[in-house]
Every structure is written in structure tokens, then in C-alpha cells.
Length: 235
Image (cartoon, rainbow, N blue to C red):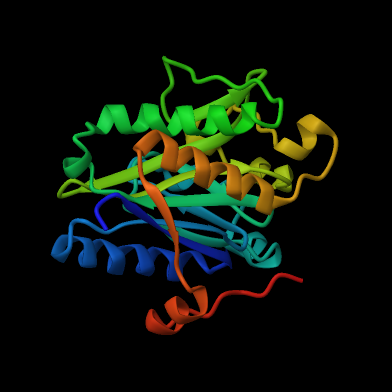
């Protein structure tokens, strides 16, 4: 088991449910440190505020949030405010860094490389910014955000990658505390719709390669029952 990565693909899940699932899996890992997991999913429209977030970085009031059907959640991840929504892949690796002998800084760099390599496979040149860790950019536009938490050597939270995201939702916040930040997506860059499952499969491959882990697909129906999860059906 120690070289396996449990792959948990969920089409769409409420942010609060995904947050609780991570906590539950983290607790299980404290009892059995050989189990590593990878949750990969989408969320409905939500603004999440990390440990350094400023409530004033949400530029619309609660009535407007309700009208646009955008949820708001406080998170214990690093970073400030960001957006998650349909068309964006959110990846939550739960990895025992102690067992793999990976430092927190190395882990962030590995995530950046995973994103860059994923985009390279579909002919998109992306780069990190050394002066601004916590994301990946294409032509100075941010396409992926990173925000992690490491507790007792085990990671939660992770990163998001804009595939066919509605980028207008970023206009209602000051993402990552930077009012000048602009965003892009895979579909905007390539001017075509790329199946989100294709990007998901590339990400899984890249994560396993970089962390030297073997993917092991869970029976998602049994997993959902075991953890009392009700995914949101995509229309």
C-alpha cells in the first residue's frame, strides 16, 4: 500500500463536503500512514478564504453572492481568497511527506512542475514565478492556484487548474490579494473545449510520476457510500 496512490475521482461536490472528506481521510492517514490519496473533482461556484485572506477582497455583498449562487467558505489552507467553480479541476493530494522525505518547499515546487508538465502535454507553455510561489502562469495570466496545508507531515488541500472555467467570477474578488492579477483557462488559450476527463487523466499520471506512486482506482460507488457522500450530478 505504501507505494500506492488511492485515486478518488468525484465529478462535482459541495466545497464543505470536500473539506470534511479531507479531514476524515487525514485522520485515517494518521492511523495508517501508508495510505496516500488523491481527490480530484469540481466544485459549484464558491469563494474560499485561506488563512491570510481579507474579507474585503470579496467585492460584492451577500445579496449579490446569493443572486449569483456563489457560496463563501473559510478554509484552513494557506493563501488568501480564490475561486472554484464548474470547468475547473480541483486536486486534493493527501500525501505523507514524511514517508516520502519531501520538505514543504519541495512539495510546492513539485506541484508547480506537475501543473507545468500537464499543460506541456497539450502544447501550452506555462511557468512558475519565483517571486510569487503558489501558482502557474501562461503569458503572465494565472491558470492555476496552489494552496496547501501540512499537518503532522500529511498534506491536505492542493491546487486548482482552469480548464473551461467561466473567468468572469474572478472579477468579484481580489484573488490572492493581487488586484492586478488576470486569469486564463485551457479552453481560452487553445480556443477549443478540451474534455476535462483528459486533463484529469494527465494530472493523475504526472502526480504519480513525480511522487513515484502507483495509481489505484477506488470503487467510487462504494467509496461514496462509505463516506456518506452525495455527488452533484453534472447536467
